Image 1 (tube, rainbow, N blue to C red):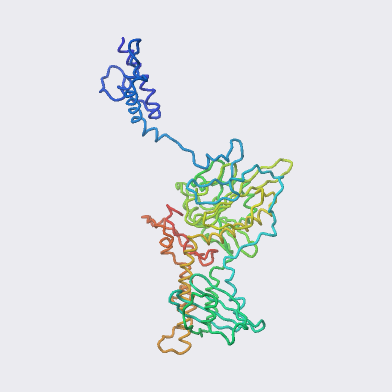
Image 2 (cartoon, rainbow, N blue to C red):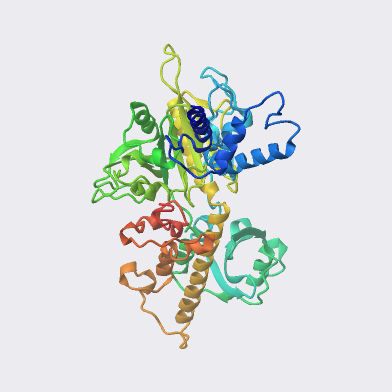
Amino acid sequence: MEREKRNDMSFSRKRSFTFGAYGGVDRFTCGDETRPESVEDNILEALDSPTTAGNKPFLSTSNNQRDAELFEIIAKLQGSRIDEQRCEFPLPLKSQLLEIGADLPLVLPSKLGGYWIDPPLEKLRNVSPTSSQHGLDPESYDIMERDGEAKIYHEFFRSRYHHSFIAVDPSLGPLVLSVCLEEEENKLRVILRMKECSLHGTFSLSLFTNMPSAVELAKRLSDKVTVSKFDVVSYLKAPDLITAFDEHRVSSNFKFGVLYQREGQFTEEDILSNNKESEKFREFLSILGDTVQLQGFTGFRGGLDVCHGQTGNEAVFTSFNGREIMFHVATKLPYTEADPQQLQRKRHIGNDIVALVYQEGQTPFLCDVIKSHFLHCFVVVRRVEREEEEGGAAYQVSVTAREDVPPFGPVIPDPPLFTDRSQLREFLLTKLINAEIACYKAEQFSRLELRTRSSLLESLHNELFSRSRCMMGDPSVAAAPPSESTRGPSEGSGGFIENFKRAIRVRSHSFETLGVPRKSTGNSSQKPKVDKDAESDSSGTAELKDQASPQEET
């Protein structure tokens, strides 16, 4: 009888112990089945030891050694399993700025950092559609220029008599210099093209006793120039080649991703798997632009298929201040039932540089939830419900970008709330365009642009040199067919125009330049397709597009 009672007590103790250590897994034996004595049995023996007036309890303050041994055994048994069960909240959710019952911010910072948020979390406040706003001035919504001096040659040189010169500097590499005499203003206008940048300046003729040489003008623009001689460019089509080089980063086309985040969605898989559009979301899309049919679409397509329907049937498109914008709306891109990553959607959105996130509900957007080497900025918009008598809807706005992306306008109003649809459209489209232009200054893109520019400048220099020698009748240079410099991609290689297109499209070493190891995949069907719109996309870094392994990035 006493033994049965002891077994019952052992069963009770054992079950309580294993539920705490193993999360509900019972490890015991029943009946008279014999079992080897274990460490757990020793603990139970100690816990069940009777205490009498003459004997001190096992867990006595006077027996520190046995007390320490007991808890050491418990720690060994429970330690690893308890660590597995521990659940630590993400760092942002422990922020003192977030109070229970208060509205959550639109964006939460990454646990690893590396992003800035505007407005910052320190400025969180309850926003009201009737609050007075500061900084809401649509007239100040200026679109940034990616290269402010790209069109100077076309504007000031092409229509005037001018000369161009070439040289190879031992330290700076190829140099292309253009000089124009503006007699009506008695000055010289000069452009010096180097690998890093182009330098532009004007000099009054009164500064010189005689007409200055090309070397003297180049050294006035940059004291790093060490060449002692420039060669004259005598090729008649040189202005066309120089214009193509100067304006290779100029584009009036942009493409942005649009993500739809519903209540309770924190992960990339959840956000990309949204397949239905609410009325509120469709209303927001109508603010951005018009829903168009892709079949037979003749405007800027942003890499979408307009012939065979492989990228969906619809898209959102708009024209804004002379620029064409195509939106890659996640819910309108193809949905794959058995693919949790939705690679057909991420192939486009993951290769965009800027994405817009539309939120329904109070779920914040985590800065790094979308894994991509290319996405550097997110503009987040949340619909704010208003009182019934006010009508309509208000939209709250926040922006987050990687830390190496410089700030850009227009300034978000204080509070960051829009009640007028036309003002919201003006603000968002300007902000998206400026965001992409600012992202090109980030380290990854700037390095890639430097490499692309260096390749194009070297090709331009070689083309101008060989063509000029041919025109001068140099027998050492074999004359190429006259139409070679303008030959299309399908007509063979050769010429600066051909090399220019090749440099823009080439993609083989993009990730090595970025310092990102490229993953290989055995499934050739998952390889990303080459974007045929690369030469017309808004990015001069088109060679960076569509490089990620589908399972990693796109």
